[in-house]
Length: 246
Ligand code: ADE
Image 1 (cartoon, rainbow, N blue to C red):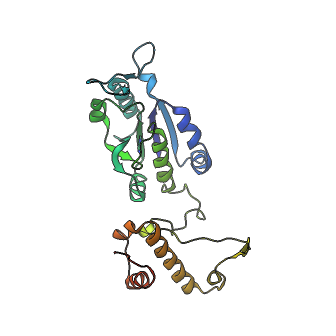
Image 2 (image 1 turned 90 degrees about the vertical axis):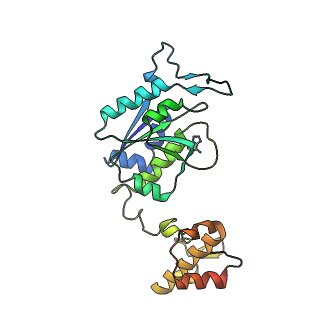
Image 3 (image 1 turned 120 degrees about the vertical axis):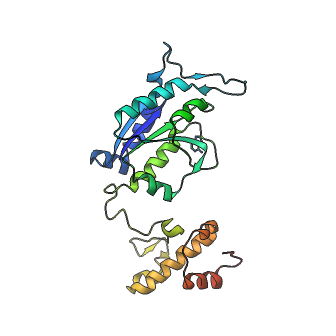
């Protein structure tokens, strides 16, 4: 996966992506990271990229030209016509299924806005997708692009080791993950649930499934709309969770 990020703060993107698992993936050649400074495409000598909006109103808007030129330049450098993703609270809300879908691309370009947004014409001309990471407003698209790249990178083959990429994860089949325990057997007076020490695999699977169902019911009942539940799941929920609407 080759990432390109158009930003006014390339050092923010680079520092984060070079850290931890994404950093290892870069070193091992599974992903590449190209942070491009939009300011390098500003025509004026002060390298300004923002201006007051037509029609008045608060804040500054990023000008169309440097954004457009930066996108065009990147398109020349990439192999195919890559998806150009504008990070904005007005976009489609990001989730795990989008992470999996984006991980199939060879190249992704992220456009990070600052100030009060980007001139609409640059968006119309260049952007293929708009993504939001949730219903709140950040000071810029950088943190949002980092969130998306982190989640997408985990889905790129080779990025996670076998140990890291266990298949039961939160949102796998739209349920939250069951609780995990490691050594020691007792910590601050709290014991690991006996069933996990029993060695009885079928009972352990059943317990884990029920924990997933109970957590989802408590924290994210909205996920049940998408989850595949069998008869046993529904019976467990009916018998154990009060007032749940499926
Ligand atoms: N830029 C500002 N807020 C954002 C959000 N919630 N998601 C994506 N990009 C953003």
